[in-house]
Amino acid sequence: MATDIITALKRSAATPDRPWLLNDTPATYADLLAATARLANTLHALGLTKGDRLLLQAEKCPEVLTLYLACLRAGIVFLPVNPAYTLAETQHFLTDAEPALAVADPDRSLAIAATGARSTALPDLLAAAAAQSPVFSDPAHGLDDLAAILYTSGTTGRSKGVMLSRDNLASNAQTLVTLWRFADTDVLLHALPVFHTHGLFVATNCALLSGSALIFQRSFSPDAVLAALPQATVMMGVPTFYTRLLSDPRLTPDACAHVRLFISGSAPLSPATHADWQVRTGHAILERYGMTETNMITSNPWSGARKAGTVGLPLPGVSVRVTGPDGTPLPPGEAGSIEVCGPNVFHGYWRLPEKTAAEFRDRWFVTGDLGAFDADGYLSILGRAKDLVITGGLNVYPAEVESALDDLPGVAASAVIGVPHPDFGEAVVACLVPAPGQTLDETGLRAGLRDRLAAFKIPKRLIFLNDLPRNAMGKVQKAALRTTYADMFQDR
Ligand code: AMP
Image (cartoon, rainbow, N blue to C red; front, side, top):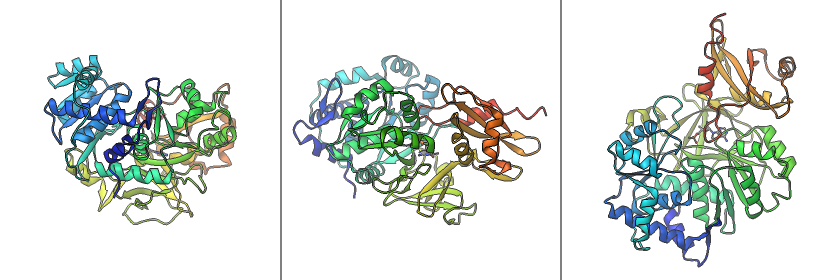
Protein backbone atom coordinates (compact mmCIF):
# COMPACT_ATOMS: atom_id res chain seq x y z
CA MET A 1 0.00 0.00 0.00
CA ALA A 2 1.30 3.45 -0.91
CA THR A 3 2.38 5.86 1.80
CA ASP A 4 -0.25 8.54 2.28
CA ILE A 5 1.04 11.96 1.26
CA ILE A 6 0.35 13.42 4.71
CA THR A 7 2.23 10.56 6.40
CA ALA A 8 5.20 11.33 4.14
CA LEU A 9 4.92 15.03 4.92
CA LYS A 10 5.02 14.33 8.67
CA ARG A 11 8.04 12.08 8.25
CA SER A 12 9.95 14.82 6.42
CA ALA A 13 8.85 17.42 8.96
CA ALA A 14 10.36 15.28 11.74
CA THR A 15 13.84 15.90 10.31
CA PRO A 16 14.93 19.29 11.61
CA ASP A 17 15.56 21.91 8.95
CA ARG A 18 14.73 19.66 6.00
CA PRO A 19 14.15 22.21 3.21
CA TRP A 20 10.78 22.38 1.44
CA LEU A 21 11.03 25.65 -0.48
CA LEU A 22 14.30 27.14 -1.67
CA ASN A 23 12.69 30.44 -2.66
CA ASP A 24 13.49 33.99 -1.57
CA THR A 25 11.37 33.16 1.46
CA PRO A 26 12.60 29.64 2.22
CA ALA A 27 10.60 27.15 4.26
CA THR A 28 11.29 23.80 5.88
CA TYR A 29 9.02 20.77 5.93
CA ALA A 30 8.35 21.55 9.60
CA ASP A 31 7.15 25.03 8.54
CA LEU A 32 4.95 23.44 5.91
CA LEU A 33 3.41 20.94 8.33
CA ALA A 34 2.61 23.72 10.81
CA ALA A 35 1.11 25.91 8.06
CA THR A 36 -1.12 23.05 6.88
CA ALA A 37 -2.29 22.51 10.48
CA ARG A 38 -3.15 26.20 10.90
CA LEU A 39 -5.15 26.17 7.69
CA ALA A 40 -6.87 22.87 8.45
CA ASN A 41 -7.90 24.28 11.85
CA THR A 42 -9.17 27.43 10.11
CA LEU A 43 -11.27 25.41 7.67
CA HIS A 44 -12.81 23.49 10.58
CA ALA A 45 -13.47 26.77 12.40
CA LEU A 46 -15.31 27.97 9.27
CA GLY A 47 -17.53 24.90 9.54
CA LEU A 48 -16.09 22.84 6.68
CA THR A 49 -16.18 19.12 7.27
CA LYS A 50 -15.03 15.93 5.57
CA GLY A 51 -16.32 15.58 2.03
CA ASP A 52 -17.07 19.30 1.58
CA ARG A 53 -15.57 20.84 -1.54
CA LEU A 54 -13.23 23.83 -1.41
CA LEU A 55 -12.78 25.70 -4.68
CA LEU A 56 -9.53 27.62 -5.07
CA GLN A 57 -8.96 30.14 -7.84
CA ALA A 58 -5.70 31.95 -7.22
CA GLU A 59 -2.51 32.89 -9.02
CA LYS A 60 0.31 30.45 -8.42
CA CYS A 61 1.94 30.90 -5.01
CA PRO A 62 3.30 28.41 -2.41
CA GLU A 63 0.14 28.83 -0.31
CA VAL A 64 -1.85 27.03 -3.02
CA LEU A 65 0.10 23.91 -2.10
CA THR A 66 -0.33 24.57 1.63
CA LEU A 67 -4.08 24.81 1.15
CA TYR A 68 -4.12 21.63 -0.97
CA LEU A 69 -2.36 19.79 1.87
CA ALA A 70 -4.59 21.34 4.56
CA CYS A 71 -7.60 20.02 2.66
CA LEU A 72 -5.98 16.59 2.40
CA ARG A 73 -5.44 16.60 6.18
CA ALA A 74 -9.00 17.67 6.97
CA GLY A 75 -10.61 15.38 4.36
CA ILE A 76 -11.94 18.36 2.39
CA VAL A 77 -12.09 17.84 -1.37
CA PHE A 78 -9.70 20.26 -3.11
CA LEU A 79 -10.98 21.81 -6.33
CA PRO A 80 -8.41 24.07 -8.02
CA VAL A 81 -9.50 26.26 -10.91
CA ASN A 82 -7.39 27.98 -13.54
CA PRO A 83 -7.09 31.65 -12.45
CA ALA A 84 -7.43 32.67 -16.10
CA TYR A 85 -11.05 31.48 -16.20
CA THR A 86 -13.63 34.23 -16.30
CA LEU A 87 -16.33 34.49 -13.67
CA ALA A 88 -18.82 33.08 -16.17
CA GLU A 89 -16.61 30.02 -16.69
CA THR A 90 -16.04 29.63 -12.94
CA GLN A 91 -19.79 29.74 -12.40
CA HIS A 92 -20.08 26.26 -13.93
CA PHE A 93 -17.79 24.83 -11.22
CA LEU A 94 -19.67 26.68 -8.47
CA THR A 95 -23.00 25.34 -9.66
CA ASP A 96 -21.79 21.84 -10.46
CA ALA A 97 -19.55 21.13 -7.45
CA GLU A 98 -21.41 23.27 -4.88
CA PRO A 99 -18.28 24.07 -2.89
CA ALA A 100 -18.81 24.88 0.79
CA LEU A 101 -16.22 27.63 0.34
CA ALA A 102 -14.58 29.36 -2.61
CA VAL A 103 -11.14 30.82 -1.87
CA ALA A 104 -9.82 33.24 -4.46
CA ASP A 105 -7.65 36.22 -5.18
CA PRO A 106 -9.32 39.29 -3.61
CA ASP A 107 -11.12 40.72 -6.67
CA ARG A 108 -12.34 37.36 -7.84
CA SER A 109 -13.46 36.49 -4.31
CA LEU A 110 -15.66 39.59 -4.24
CA ALA A 111 -17.10 38.70 -7.63
CA ILE A 112 -17.83 35.12 -6.53
CA ALA A 113 -19.46 36.36 -3.33
CA ALA A 114 -21.68 38.63 -5.45
CA THR A 115 -23.09 35.51 -7.16
CA GLY A 116 -24.33 34.31 -3.79
CA ALA A 117 -21.62 31.65 -3.20
CA ARG A 118 -19.66 31.68 0.06
CA SER A 119 -16.23 33.09 -0.67
CA THR A 120 -13.16 34.39 1.09
CA ALA A 121 -9.99 36.05 -0.20
CA LEU A 122 -6.87 33.89 0.07
CA PRO A 123 -4.93 36.60 2.03
CA ASP A 124 -7.82 36.81 4.53
CA LEU A 125 -7.85 33.05 4.99
CA LEU A 126 -4.08 33.07 5.57
CA ALA A 127 -4.42 35.92 8.08
CA ALA A 128 -7.07 33.97 9.97
CA ALA A 129 -4.83 30.88 9.91
CA ALA A 130 -1.98 32.78 11.58
CA ALA A 131 -4.06 32.90 14.76
CA GLN A 132 -4.74 29.15 14.75
CA SER A 133 -2.81 26.32 16.42
CA PRO A 134 0.11 24.81 14.45
CA VAL A 135 -1.08 21.38 15.59
CA PHE A 136 -3.99 19.58 13.96
CA SER A 137 -5.33 16.17 14.90
CA ASP A 138 -5.92 14.39 11.63
CA PRO A 139 -9.13 12.40 11.33
CA ALA A 140 -8.95 8.84 9.98
CA HIS A 141 -9.12 8.65 6.19
CA GLY A 142 -10.02 5.80 3.85
CA LEU A 143 -7.97 5.05 0.76
CA ASP A 144 -11.00 5.65 -1.43
CA ASP A 145 -11.93 8.97 0.19
CA LEU A 146 -12.00 11.78 -2.33
CA ALA A 147 -8.92 14.00 -2.29
CA ALA A 148 -9.65 16.30 -5.20
CA ILE A 149 -11.87 17.14 -8.11
CA LEU A 150 -10.08 18.49 -11.17
CA TYR A 151 -12.19 19.73 -14.03
CA THR A 152 -11.13 18.62 -17.51
CA SER A 153 -10.09 21.42 -19.81
CA GLY A 154 -13.31 20.85 -21.74
CA THR A 155 -12.36 21.61 -25.32
CA THR A 156 -15.58 19.87 -26.35
CA GLY A 157 -18.77 20.17 -24.36
CA ARG A 158 -18.99 21.00 -20.69
CA SER A 159 -16.01 20.50 -18.49
CA LYS A 160 -16.39 17.42 -16.25
CA GLY A 161 -15.22 17.04 -12.63
CA VAL A 162 -12.69 14.22 -12.32
CA MET A 163 -12.93 12.59 -8.86
CA LEU A 164 -9.54 11.49 -7.56
CA SER A 165 -9.10 9.51 -4.36
CA ARG A 166 -6.27 9.72 -1.84
CA ASP A 167 -4.97 6.38 -3.08
CA ASN A 168 -5.14 7.45 -6.74
CA LEU A 169 -2.70 10.23 -5.87
CA ALA A 170 -0.49 8.40 -3.37
CA SER A 171 -0.09 5.18 -5.35
CA ASN A 172 0.81 6.99 -8.55
CA ALA A 173 3.27 9.30 -6.80
CA GLN A 174 4.91 6.32 -5.06
CA THR A 175 5.38 4.57 -8.41
CA LEU A 176 6.93 7.67 -9.97
CA VAL A 177 9.23 8.32 -7.01
CA THR A 178 10.63 4.80 -7.34
CA LEU A 179 10.82 4.84 -11.14
CA TRP A 180 12.41 8.28 -11.41
CA ARG A 181 14.60 7.68 -8.33
CA PHE A 182 13.49 10.68 -6.33
CA ALA A 183 15.36 11.12 -3.01
CA ASP A 184 15.47 13.72 -0.27
CA THR A 185 18.63 15.11 -1.87
CA ASP A 186 16.66 16.17 -4.95
CA VAL A 187 15.74 19.75 -5.77
CA LEU A 188 12.81 19.99 -8.16
CA LEU A 189 12.48 23.05 -10.37
CA HIS A 190 8.74 23.77 -10.40
CA ALA A 191 7.57 26.22 -13.09
CA LEU A 192 4.26 24.49 -13.98
CA PRO A 193 0.76 25.72 -13.14
CA VAL A 194 -0.72 24.25 -9.95
CA PHE A 195 -4.36 23.97 -11.05
CA HIS A 196 -3.52 21.02 -13.36
CA THR A 197 -2.50 17.43 -12.60
CA HIS A 198 1.06 17.90 -13.91
CA GLY A 199 2.15 20.69 -11.55
CA LEU A 200 -0.21 19.93 -8.68
CA PHE A 201 0.10 16.15 -8.45
CA VAL A 202 2.95 14.76 -10.55
CA ALA A 203 5.51 17.37 -9.51
CA THR A 204 4.35 18.24 -6.01
CA ASN A 205 3.48 14.74 -4.83
CA CYS A 206 6.81 13.32 -6.05
CA ALA A 207 8.58 15.98 -4.00
CA LEU A 208 6.38 15.43 -0.94
CA LEU A 209 6.69 11.65 -0.95
CA SER A 210 10.45 11.73 -1.29
CA GLY A 211 11.13 14.73 0.95
CA SER A 212 12.72 16.71 -1.92
CA ALA A 213 12.99 20.49 -1.97
CA LEU A 214 11.23 22.72 -4.50
CA ILE A 215 12.36 25.80 -6.34
CA PHE A 216 8.88 27.17 -6.87
CA GLN A 217 8.53 29.67 -9.72
CA ARG A 218 5.42 31.74 -10.34
CA SER A 219 5.29 30.86 -14.02
CA PHE A 220 7.63 29.64 -16.71
CA SER A 221 10.27 32.16 -17.73
CA PRO A 222 13.52 31.14 -19.46
CA ASP A 223 15.43 33.76 -17.41
CA ALA A 224 14.20 32.38 -14.08
CA VAL A 225 14.63 28.75 -15.12
CA LEU A 226 18.18 29.29 -16.40
CA ALA A 227 19.06 31.14 -13.20
CA ALA A 228 17.74 28.27 -11.05
CA LEU A 229 19.08 25.28 -13.03
CA PRO A 230 22.49 25.29 -11.26
CA GLN A 231 20.67 24.49 -7.97
CA ALA A 232 18.16 22.00 -9.43
CA THR A 233 18.50 18.24 -9.86
CA VAL A 234 15.18 17.58 -11.66
CA MET A 235 12.98 19.68 -13.93
CA MET A 236 9.49 18.75 -15.08
CA GLY A 237 8.06 20.63 -18.00
CA VAL A 238 5.71 20.69 -20.93
CA PRO A 239 7.32 20.55 -24.39
CA THR A 240 7.10 24.32 -24.88
CA PHE A 241 9.46 24.78 -21.89
CA TYR A 242 12.04 22.76 -23.78
CA THR A 243 11.56 24.44 -27.17
CA ARG A 244 11.73 27.89 -25.59
CA LEU A 245 14.87 27.05 -23.64
CA LEU A 246 16.46 25.66 -26.80
CA SER A 247 16.08 29.03 -28.49
CA ASP A 248 18.13 30.63 -25.67
CA PRO A 249 21.92 30.69 -26.21
CA ARG A 250 22.48 30.44 -22.45
CA LEU A 251 21.32 26.80 -22.55
CA THR A 252 24.66 24.93 -22.39
CA PRO A 253 25.95 21.66 -20.89
CA ASP A 254 27.38 23.73 -18.03
CA ALA A 255 24.00 25.31 -17.28
CA CYS A 256 22.54 21.78 -16.87
CA ALA A 257 25.52 20.17 -15.15
CA HIS A 258 23.76 19.81 -11.77
CA VAL A 259 20.54 18.36 -13.21
CA ARG A 260 20.10 14.58 -13.19
CA LEU A 261 16.72 14.38 -14.94
CA PHE A 262 14.59 16.38 -17.36
CA ILE A 263 11.01 15.12 -17.69
CA SER A 264 8.40 16.13 -20.28
CA GLY A 265 4.69 15.49 -20.55
CA SER A 266 1.15 16.82 -21.10
CA ALA A 267 1.69 17.21 -24.85
CA PRO A 268 3.83 15.49 -27.48
CA LEU A 269 7.55 16.19 -27.39
CA SER A 270 8.80 16.10 -30.95
CA PRO A 271 11.71 13.76 -31.72
CA ALA A 272 13.49 16.82 -33.15
CA THR A 273 13.27 18.64 -29.79
CA HIS A 274 14.44 15.48 -28.00
CA ALA A 275 17.46 15.24 -30.31
CA ASP A 276 18.28 18.98 -30.15
CA TRP A 277 18.14 18.89 -26.35
CA GLN A 278 20.49 15.92 -26.20
CA VAL A 279 23.00 17.62 -28.50
CA ARG A 280 22.84 20.92 -26.60
CA THR A 281 22.85 19.62 -23.01
CA GLY A 282 23.94 15.97 -23.08
CA HIS A 283 20.60 14.95 -21.47
CA ALA A 284 17.98 12.63 -22.99
CA ILE A 285 14.62 14.08 -21.93
CA LEU A 286 12.42 11.44 -20.27
CA GLU A 287 8.93 11.62 -21.78
CA ARG A 288 5.91 10.29 -19.92
CA TYR A 289 2.17 10.16 -20.60
CA GLY A 290 -0.86 10.63 -18.42
CA MET A 291 -4.11 12.46 -18.08
CA THR A 292 -6.24 14.05 -15.37
CA GLU A 293 -8.49 10.95 -15.15
CA THR A 294 -5.66 8.44 -14.82
CA ASN A 295 -2.69 10.26 -13.30
CA MET A 296 0.43 8.91 -15.02
CA ILE A 297 0.12 5.88 -17.29
CA THR A 298 3.48 5.26 -19.01
CA SER A 299 7.02 6.54 -18.76
CA ASN A 300 10.29 6.11 -20.52
CA PRO A 301 12.74 4.43 -18.15
CA TRP A 302 15.32 6.00 -15.86
CA SER A 303 17.92 3.51 -17.01
CA GLY A 304 17.49 1.97 -20.44
CA ALA A 305 16.51 3.52 -23.73
CA ARG A 306 14.48 6.74 -23.65
CA LYS A 307 12.97 6.46 -27.09
CA ALA A 308 12.15 9.79 -28.72
CA GLY A 309 8.62 9.95 -30.12
CA THR A 310 7.37 7.38 -27.60
CA VAL A 311 5.92 7.80 -24.13
CA GLY A 312 7.65 4.69 -22.84
CA LEU A 313 6.42 1.63 -21.00
CA PRO A 314 3.34 1.09 -18.79
CA LEU A 315 4.10 2.06 -15.19
CA PRO A 316 4.51 -0.82 -12.73
CA GLY A 317 1.04 -1.78 -11.46
CA VAL A 318 -0.72 -0.01 -14.35
CA SER A 319 -2.21 -2.08 -17.20
CA VAL A 320 -2.38 -0.54 -20.65
CA ARG A 321 -3.82 -2.06 -23.81
CA VAL A 322 -4.44 -0.91 -27.37
CA THR A 323 -7.72 -2.17 -28.78
CA GLY A 324 -9.60 -2.32 -32.05
CA PRO A 325 -13.15 -0.98 -32.51
CA ASP A 326 -14.72 -4.10 -30.93
CA GLY A 327 -12.47 -3.92 -27.86
CA THR A 328 -10.12 -6.74 -28.90
CA PRO A 329 -6.51 -6.10 -27.81
CA LEU A 330 -4.25 -5.48 -30.80
CA PRO A 331 -0.68 -6.77 -31.29
CA PRO A 332 2.37 -4.45 -31.34
CA GLY A 333 2.57 -2.28 -34.43
CA GLU A 334 -1.20 -1.90 -34.80
CA ALA A 335 -2.89 1.38 -33.95
CA GLY A 336 -6.01 1.55 -31.82
CA SER A 337 -7.67 2.96 -28.72
CA ILE A 338 -5.54 3.24 -25.56
CA GLU A 339 -7.25 1.78 -22.47
CA VAL A 340 -5.99 1.74 -18.91
CA CYS A 341 -6.75 0.11 -15.59
CA GLY A 342 -5.02 0.21 -12.22
CA PRO A 343 -4.97 2.04 -8.89
CA ASN A 344 -4.22 5.27 -10.76
CA VAL A 345 -7.62 5.41 -12.51
CA PHE A 346 -10.12 7.96 -11.17
CA HIS A 347 -13.41 7.21 -9.40
CA GLY A 348 -15.68 8.75 -12.02
CA TYR A 349 -16.96 12.11 -13.19
CA TRP A 350 -18.64 14.14 -10.47
CA ARG A 351 -22.41 13.65 -10.58
CA LEU A 352 -22.21 12.11 -14.08
CA PRO A 353 -22.60 8.33 -13.55
CA GLU A 354 -23.80 7.73 -17.11
CA LYS A 355 -20.96 9.69 -18.67
CA THR A 356 -18.56 7.76 -16.42
CA ALA A 357 -20.02 4.39 -17.45
CA ALA A 358 -19.80 5.37 -21.13
CA GLU A 359 -16.04 5.92 -20.86
CA PHE A 360 -15.25 2.50 -19.40
CA ARG A 361 -15.13 -0.87 -21.18
CA ASP A 362 -15.56 -3.26 -18.24
CA ARG A 363 -12.84 -2.18 -15.82
CA TRP A 364 -10.81 -0.45 -18.56
CA PHE A 365 -10.92 3.33 -18.89
CA VAL A 366 -11.01 4.39 -22.53
CA THR A 367 -8.60 7.31 -22.64
CA GLY A 368 -9.76 8.77 -25.97
CA ASP A 369 -6.15 8.64 -27.17
CA LEU A 370 -4.99 6.53 -30.10
CA GLY A 371 -1.67 4.75 -29.99
CA ALA A 372 0.41 1.71 -30.79
CA PHE A 373 2.99 -0.37 -28.93
CA ASP A 374 6.28 -1.22 -30.59
CA ALA A 375 7.97 -4.62 -30.34
CA ASP A 376 9.78 -3.55 -27.14
CA GLY A 377 6.54 -2.53 -25.42
CA TYR A 378 7.01 1.25 -25.81
CA LEU A 379 3.81 3.17 -26.50
CA SER A 380 3.48 5.92 -29.11
CA ILE A 381 0.58 8.38 -29.01
CA LEU A 382 -1.01 8.98 -32.39
CA GLY A 383 -3.41 11.70 -31.30
CA ARG A 384 -6.84 12.02 -29.73
CA ALA A 385 -9.49 9.74 -31.26
CA LYS A 386 -11.60 12.79 -32.01
CA ASP A 387 -8.67 14.30 -33.94
CA LEU A 388 -8.28 11.25 -36.21
CA VAL A 389 -8.71 12.35 -39.81
CA ILE A 390 -10.71 10.09 -42.11
CA THR A 391 -10.08 11.15 -45.67
CA GLY A 392 -11.62 9.24 -48.58
CA GLY A 393 -12.32 6.43 -46.10
CA LEU A 394 -8.68 6.13 -45.01
CA ASN A 395 -7.40 6.83 -41.50
CA VAL A 396 -4.70 9.43 -41.08
CA TYR A 397 -3.10 9.73 -37.65
CA PRO A 398 -2.20 13.39 -37.13
CA ALA A 399 0.88 12.52 -35.06
CA GLU A 400 2.45 10.63 -37.96
CA VAL A 401 2.06 13.56 -40.36
CA GLU A 402 3.19 16.06 -37.71
CA SER A 403 6.31 14.06 -37.04
CA ALA A 404 7.14 13.96 -40.78
CA LEU A 405 6.59 17.72 -41.02
CA ASP A 406 8.63 18.48 -37.89
CA ASP A 407 11.58 16.62 -39.42
CA LEU A 408 11.67 18.94 -42.44
CA PRO A 409 14.17 21.80 -42.37
CA GLY A 410 12.79 25.12 -41.15
CA VAL A 411 9.69 23.70 -39.42
CA ALA A 412 9.45 24.63 -35.74
CA ALA A 413 6.02 23.14 -34.99
CA SER A 414 3.04 21.67 -36.79
CA ALA A 415 -0.56 20.69 -36.17
CA VAL A 416 -2.55 18.46 -38.47
CA ILE A 417 -6.34 18.60 -38.54
CA GLY A 418 -9.22 17.24 -40.58
CA VAL A 419 -11.37 19.81 -42.36
CA PRO A 420 -14.73 19.03 -44.06
CA HIS A 421 -14.21 18.41 -47.76
CA PRO A 422 -16.89 17.84 -50.46
CA ASP A 423 -15.09 14.89 -52.11
CA PHE A 424 -13.04 13.30 -49.36
CA GLY A 425 -15.36 13.81 -46.38
CA GLU A 426 -12.40 15.29 -44.57
CA ALA A 427 -9.18 16.69 -45.96
CA VAL A 428 -5.83 16.63 -44.18
CA VAL A 429 -4.71 20.19 -43.45
CA ALA A 430 -1.43 21.16 -41.79
CA CYS A 431 -0.74 24.34 -39.86
CA LEU A 432 2.97 25.09 -39.73
CA VAL A 433 5.14 27.46 -37.74
CA PRO A 434 8.54 28.32 -39.23
CA ALA A 435 11.67 28.17 -37.08
CA PRO A 436 12.97 31.65 -36.10
CA GLY A 437 14.45 33.45 -39.10
CA GLN A 438 13.26 30.83 -41.61
CA THR A 439 10.75 31.10 -44.43
CA LEU A 440 8.85 27.98 -45.40
CA ASP A 441 8.51 27.05 -49.04
CA GLU A 442 5.46 24.97 -49.96
CA THR A 443 7.08 23.21 -52.94
CA GLY A 444 10.10 22.13 -50.90
CA LEU A 445 7.92 20.92 -48.03
CA ARG A 446 5.73 18.88 -50.34
CA ALA A 447 8.78 17.28 -51.97
CA GLY A 448 10.10 16.40 -48.49
CA LEU A 449 6.77 14.83 -47.50
CA ARG A 450 6.53 12.73 -50.67
CA ASP A 451 9.60 10.75 -49.54
CA ARG A 452 8.05 9.99 -46.19
CA LEU A 453 4.29 9.64 -46.48
CA ALA A 454 1.75 7.88 -48.68
CA ALA A 455 -0.04 10.34 -50.97
CA PHE A 456 -3.36 10.21 -49.08
CA LYS A 457 -1.61 11.41 -45.88
CA ILE A 458 -0.02 14.46 -47.50
CA PRO A 459 -1.91 17.60 -46.46
CA LYS A 460 -4.20 19.10 -49.10
CA ARG A 461 -3.35 22.51 -47.73
CA LEU A 462 -0.38 23.92 -45.83
CA ILE A 463 -1.16 26.95 -43.70
CA PHE A 464 1.71 29.06 -42.36
CA LEU A 465 1.18 30.65 -38.95
CA ASN A 466 3.32 32.63 -36.53
CA ASP A 467 2.16 30.43 -33.66
CA LEU A 468 -0.22 27.60 -32.89
CA PRO A 469 -3.08 28.23 -30.44
CA ARG A 470 -2.15 26.43 -27.20
CA ASN A 471 -3.67 26.12 -23.73
CA ALA A 472 -1.84 26.72 -20.46
CA MET A 473 -0.25 23.26 -20.64
CA GLY A 474 1.14 23.85 -24.12
CA LYS A 475 -1.43 21.59 -25.80
CA VAL A 476 -2.40 22.66 -29.31
CA GLN A 477 -6.08 23.63 -29.43
CA LYS A 478 -7.09 21.61 -32.48
CA ALA A 479 -10.78 22.34 -31.98
CA ALA A 480 -10.01 26.05 -32.42
CA LEU A 481 -8.03 25.36 -35.62
CA ARG A 482 -10.86 23.19 -36.98
CA THR A 483 -13.35 25.99 -36.36
CA THR A 484 -11.12 28.59 -38.00
CA TYR A 485 -10.62 26.55 -41.17
CA ALA A 486 -14.00 24.74 -41.23
CA ASP A 487 -15.16 26.36 -44.47
CA MET A 488 -11.96 26.40 -46.48
CA PHE A 489 -13.09 23.71 -48.96
CA GLN A 490 -16.78 24.56 -49.02
CA ASP A 491 -16.81 27.03 -51.90
CA ARG A 492 -15.02 24.77 -54.34
P1 AMP B 1 -4.86 16.41 -19.30
O1 AMP B 1 -5.99 15.65 -18.73
O2 AMP B 1 -5.11 17.87 -19.43
O3 AMP B 1 -3.58 16.11 -18.57
O4 AMP B 1 -4.67 15.90 -20.79
C1 AMP B 1 -4.38 14.56 -21.03
C2 AMP B 1 -4.06 14.36 -22.48
O5 AMP B 1 -2.83 14.99 -22.83
C3 AMP B 1 -3.84 12.91 -22.83
O6 AMP B 1 -5.07 12.22 -22.98
C4 AMP B 1 -3.03 13.02 -24.10
O7 AMP B 1 -3.88 13.27 -25.20
C5 AMP B 1 -2.18 14.26 -23.84
N1 AMP B 1 -0.83 13.91 -23.39
C6 AMP B 1 -0.34 13.85 -22.15
N2 AMP B 1 0.96 13.50 -22.14
C7 AMP B 1 1.31 13.34 -23.45
C8 AMP B 1 2.51 12.98 -24.14
N3 AMP B 1 3.64 12.75 -23.48
N4 AMP B 1 2.47 12.90 -25.49
C9 AMP B 1 1.33 13.14 -26.17
N5 AMP B 1 0.17 13.49 -25.59
C10 AMP B 1 0.16 13.59 -24.24
